[in-house]
Structure formats: structure tokens, C-alpha cells
Image (cartoon, rainbow over all chains, first blue to last red; front, side, top):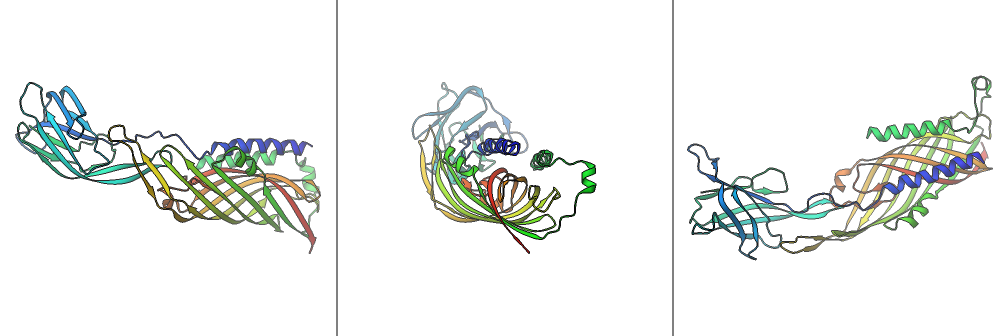
Length: 160
Length: 228
């Protein structure tokens, strides 16, 4: 009978252990990737530029009019590329009092990427081309074409 | 990985410490030499799996084991089974089914005290092979700004190879009728194949996306014996 007690105890423990191996876990990872844009003034030497804080920068999606990012005295802006398109147009204004709003157009490829069984798939992007208008903007340079959720990566520099 | 080995070791030590047979040094010295004059073939069914199947509908498995007593406390082991898994989440929906087989051996750590003593605490090694069919998967990419995107990934046949280190006990409750458990550390050998959209559950192994896993079996067994 003692043997049986031990055996039953281990059956119970085993079921508890096995129950921990659940199929579905909660998704704890970010499910969106963002493109980071920095604003700069051309430097005297080199191509990196000097930080340029916009008085009141506003980046707005042309397609739906939604503000992607904005802020006073800011030089880093996040945008989300659309998984349902391969081109995105942004209206970029430096200050509401300054006339002239530029347009930046990014053309990109998208790649379906598996994250985990808990989070499923997301899209990663590769910037192929960029075009801009020159009311205030001098140039736009793509520094890191791959948009894959890597932290602290600036993808493009906007020079004023 | 080392934590699995540690856990297995602790459980093995617990198993050995069971009062299956009270032994002391004197008895050890005086114990009779057991000749391997009887062969044993044991059929085992993992009764923990039907219980878990009832508790967790997303994973289903059935496992059987056959072991054959060779000699010198070595048992040759063959295992097999089948099962399925399904994942129904906000982001992914798919299923998998599989069959599996394992071969290996167990080495008893307890010397037999008399010819009919078939109780054992053991360690063992297995090679496992699973043949898996994963269904088409549908995914949803949720995006509050641009709207949701949906799509599907075609189904796929896959093969899983793994090794197992295991330990456990078998106790003869009545003539030929055993109960016992195995605790297993499993290590997937071809994990790269399962990096993208792994099967939700591989019967015989466990969760598809994991390169190492810890598992438990509880067996009821029936043994037949014959003389050489």
C-alpha cells in the first residue's frame, strides 16, 4: 500500500508538471515596428549632420490625415509604415507659423516575419526609395533601410 | 539545459531513496547472485496522457512503451504513440498531428534481490523520431492605425528528431502488474526546422517551438515472463 501511495503522489506531481507545458502563451513582444526619423542641420564636415530640434514638428500621414508624431523642440519622430501598401507619404511641417509644408515619400518592400506562436506574424520593411519636396527640407538620407524592430536604430535623416 | 539534468538527478535520487527495499550494508554483502534465467517483456500504457487530454483540449497524446529485459539490469525499450495539437489564438490558428517512435534502453540502478524481484529505479537514453503534419495556418496582424491584415501559410510535413535522458521507477504491485513513472529531459536535434511556425504540440516530445523540454509519464504495465 505504501508503494501505491508514492506512485499516486508522483502521478499527481507529474500532471502538475505536464500542465505547465501549455500550448498557448501570452504575447509579450511588441507587435508593431516603427521607423525612426531624425532631423538635422548639415554639419561643416562629414555627412552625419548636427541635431536640429524642430520648433513644433508635425508628421502627418497623407492617406488618412492622422498625425504620426509631433512635438515641440523635438528631433526624433516615429512613424508606422502601412502593411497594406508599399508607399507612404508624409506631410512634414516644422512649425505651424512657418509657411511651407514638405512631403516625404518612402517606397518600401514588406516581409512577413514570424515572431512566435504566441504573437504570430508581423511585417518587417525595407526602404527602397525616398523622395521629398524642398520648401524647408534640404535632403533626406536613408541610413538604415531595414525596419525590423531593432532598438535605437535611426532609419532616415531629414536635413534642413 | 543544466537545470534539466539537475532536476532529473534530484528526482532519480528521490526515486532511489524510496523504501522499495530496505537494504543495509550487511544485506548488501550477503545478497545472492541473481542469474538472468528469466526473460521479461513488459507492455506499458501512459495513463497520465488521457487525463491531460481531458484537461487540455489543445493537446492530445497517447503513448505506449514496450521494454524487454536483456541481461545485467539492461532493458531495451521501444516506444510509440500519436497525438495532435491546435493553436487558436488572436493572432494564429492552426493544427498539427503526428506519430512518433522512440528506441533506447534503461539501466536499472537497483540490484535485484531475488529472481522475482523486478522492481526498478533506472536511468535511460532514447532517440525519438516524430512525423508531423502541420495544417494551413491563418494569421491576423492587428494594427490600430492601418487596420488588420489577414493571410494564410500553407501546411507542411515535418520530421522531428530528438534525444531524451530519462529516469524513473517501476514497482510490481501484483504478479506481472506494474506501475511507475518516467521523468524526461528532451533535446530537439533539428530545432532549426521549427523556427518558423512550429507544430503547436508534438506527441512524444512536447511543445513544438522549444529546443529542450521537460516531460513526465505515468505508466501502468503488464509483464509476461518466460524461462530461457
